[in-house]
Image (tube, rainbow, N blue to C red; front, side):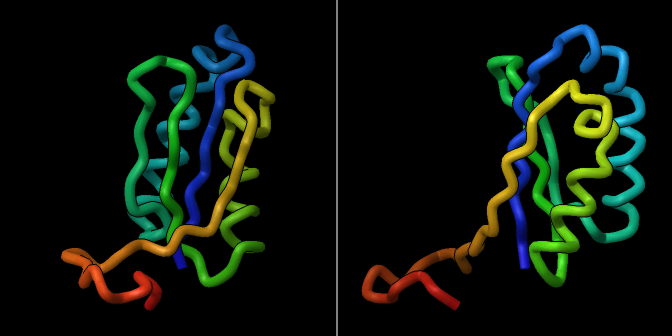
Length: 96
């Protein structure tokens, strides 16, 4: 399953300090196949990470261990995501 983590910055200075550790963490999980994509929002207020995990509990552990969450630089909103197989048949429900 796919899970999307919205990481909203709540402490800009702490975020700046922790960002190198955050990027190391994201890179390591990407190499392990646990992150599909990640990146900042263009408004500078945070970013998002798309995790690949067998269940929400595993995804939550991965997201909560991100240094920006551990250090309180960002908040975490984690949601299960049903990625569509594109192109989508308009007559389908969009569910797999």
